[in-house]
Image (cartoon, rainbow over all chains, first blue to last red; front, top):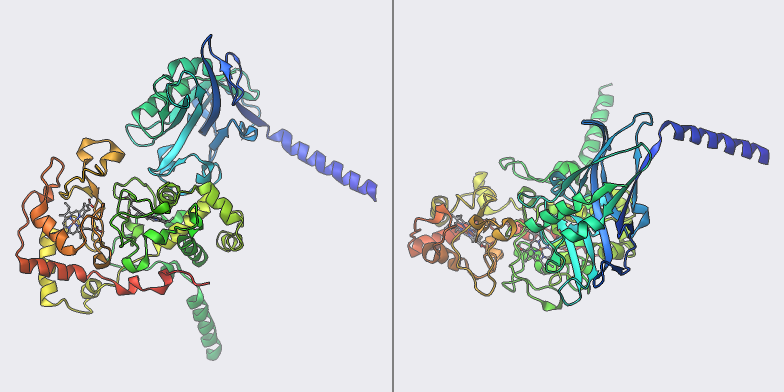
Length: 229
Length: 336
């Protein structure tokens, strides 16, 4: 009797492993680095002799993921909306389903949510308004939240809070990012804070909380600090 | 054989009648334009509408469980708030604006006086999260609903899922609001040729068509545009309306043209509730128009009305009252 069960289990295992090998699942992992080392949230890190910073929130939408060979798009993820929250490890990698024997050399995706989706009413999953990434007094998704503390910030709590977004001209903050892929293994995408922080004016621009040209500008700076590791 | 066929026909017609079609849930005069709301993304059902109605009347949506949507939008005033010019929220804090009457919302393209809200589904988030209105957040509302005795079951009946989400909560509230259709005023029955205006109302209707209907366009009594109708800025609020959203100087002092249906009961009037009586409103249009760069072209020539004409115009506006809407038990508080 037990033997029979074991046999059955083995059969099921074989069956699933077969399924698995047909469709390899490629992962995209997101992370961030500061001073060339992996970022730890909520920990003060020295920037130079006098200044330090603690990053508390990095939370953003990645959408419309495409894999391409040069300029031709080979794979486009259907219904592609992902909320990445560095506080929640399980959200830091995205699993993609695509056929194994194609070698891509480019990945394209949007940082943020497209305008059509912004005006589509209540949506579920990662787009559910309970995720805390939706402005309430004036509608629209927050594409990117970047929050923390630093003595550089000239305000009462030495804090900064960037909530970036906006889908209407001229404040459309969504950014298309294209990165070159070196090999077809899992992708590790890094937000390089060593490139990002010097371009932000943390000392006097501490808060961006609504769609604005300032939000567009900072969204561009952030998009430029995405890199393949 | 014939009896058999008749029997089948009979059974079929009973079945047909007993099904709720979309039309039973959402009825509007055939002469109206098609609604703007996309029902394919949120198909109406009796269970969802009832759930939305319960949520609309439930103070569980506010932080201290004292305020529900109806606190500022009550049925007998066409779902606006008539005691105060500016709406009151939790801790009796006073908001910047007067709550608009809620009706025929499926035709609206944007919401709020300045169009800040782009979709009816997202409307409820604004009062729920506003610290001076309900002072709550949707994540916590969903948590409270999930842990209540009644809601998981009601959400299951409505959405086939007892896990409550923000999406489903908002969609249910939308469904109830979509059913708030007012289309049975005296004006409507005159248009259907089922009754007649009095001489006075009929005069008023002519005056209305000559002076008002370019913005308050029939049959919904709004053109859904943002217009500057010549109100002076109140220096204690400095509310520039649409410009806050678009940052365009040509949108300065423009507000969404409100419907005039049930206007008799939706006082006080204007975005800040500055006028208490319809006669104040008419006097504004005849004598109070403030010149400014963005004043609507439609109001550039002075409107002259005699005092009799003013009375006639008001008597026409009163034909827009829809008692069936104001007292329809389907829209009221759910008695347990």
